[in-house]
Length: 443
Image (cartoon, rainbow, N blue to C red):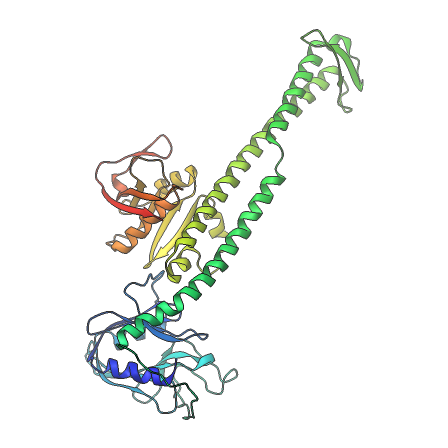
């Protein structure tokens, strides 16, 4: 972000006297409410730091690191004493007086738009670092940022920037700043996430191809059972250790049957053929179950890709496919259900009938259950922890319910109620009477 832009933002913010609330809404994004009106977002990503205004921002999790605790304690409901941009630097300083403490505490939030070392640093009146979004060691930078140490000032320097010309209001400019980056960043992120999903789908397709042919296995099983029955019916004609035998089948045709080499007696040969028939039948059943499992996984991934494809912002895609890798335990849990997080609430989506049954069993009485109205659908659970669920979370969960249940575009009704009002019967089938309904449009 250019220094001249920071100056314009500072002039705009000087109309405010108070910071109502401040919080981290993404790993590198702060959300600040000044008095009233739309919130200001500060994106401190190293590759492209900037400020923007957006009416809604989907937050996956609640941040509770030491930085976030001090940020909230020192700056929420605080009085603004000064907002300034350092000379010769792309650094914005918010100086406040905390009003929520019995003792007045002056604190500075230093927002540094300095490329590789972009940061948010909280310092006290003595310029001692209280916390920082990124702790920096002197071994990797010319200036360290450590809790308890005095923060060295960056020396002013000559900044070579193109002139910044503001056309229209700054508020409109900050709204456009997000939209300007949205198309390119959103498109790049979609390509990246869809490539990940396509890779997973390709693996499933390969797994499907490697499965034994179910129909052939059943035919082989029936053939073995038929041979075993004929051997059993002709025991008196077969001698021990015979490698094969010619008999007349039940339709009057002469057939030759290969006997197991290990069979010492005709009876043993029949038993071994029956056993082989059973194994082939079990193998066919296993192949059928594996096929169903792979098809369910593939369908789920394809519908997840559809959600990614229609996502309107980066935050939603990161909620659908988070950056952090899943551990093995989480992968095991995801055999039957998928977990999403929005505003700190856990949302569980059943992947199949087993997943739906598991969700019904494991959900707490106060959790919210969602299902398509009068239609077969996946079950969705919002873990409430006995808290009131925000509308944005309800709508998002209902959207997941629709998109993972149907392929056709259009409007759908989603019923939701507390889990205690849902009476399961016959597997994943349920009965419920007390409920509310949301209308969701699938794009």
